[in-house]
Length: 90
Length: 304
View 1 (tube, rainbow over the protein chains, first blue to last red):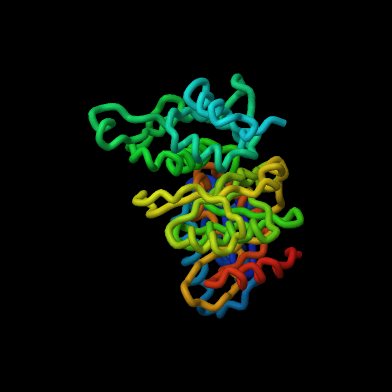
View 2: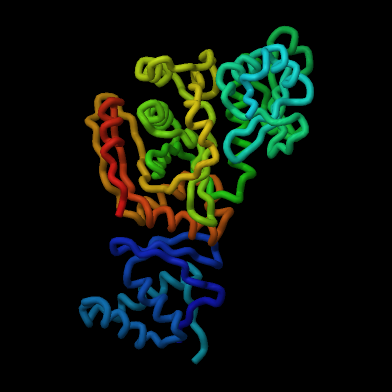
């Protein structure tokens, strides 16, 4: 199960397919793609499973089903590395 | 309103050497102390139109340009810059005293005025809309700024863009425009009747001189401006004039790279800068010909 890290308020702007987001925990500012911000917005609604997050990506973007799992895992790993999301016990 | 020009040279020197000269430059008041002729020369030449405040007025910055002590004062006199009695820099030759005052006043603002999001940039305004010119030294920013403010644009600053977080407007700090090396003669040739301080050679920035700020810009120093254009200038000898749009997200990071306190301001800095990017059109601007550059700026359209 994945969740937004507590304390993240997701201040961001989306311009021309690129997203600039302020990280409340690190104080850094990140340049993110559309997929990453869709995952963060989904997690702002509440914790979600990897499968549910993959479904979000599938619904929003035309991703090859064979690449969907890899794409989802890569994005979640990157967002976790930035202290934006975290896993939690089910 | 009394201005610095209302003082005689003798009165000016007495104020500088005694209680200090409180001068308002836009949002800030600096009380300047100095017994040095070079400082009085620069202030007399370039600060005549600024409001002169009473001796007891509150000052944001109490600064001094004072001769350093020691044996060196007899054979190679130097000057120290101090703020509230603290001496943050190594001394410089006394001939550098006036540029040191200008650099010191910039330093006072950029290290203390954290109520604003501060960007290292020139800012000029026309019809209430401001063009922000962020750039590192050597990019031709001040040359372009000096030319623009003598072709219908109002000077807000040639060094510091101050964004007010409450409303995103730019707060003016109109002070003399710092010119270096070849740009001194370029501006002399471009601006009829340009008033420049005596060039000072062999500074850490080469030869420097300061251009007097237009009187209208000083008189309107309380008028804020709405950010409308972000233009990253780059002077390249012989280059064709070119104005190239920049995607907003990329412009955001490039402006942040030129900020003094973006990280310090945290989420407030993000919101302020994001608001500015929302309302601005952003460009790279390459130029070599000032007349062509003026034409490009004159044709800038207000963003939607």
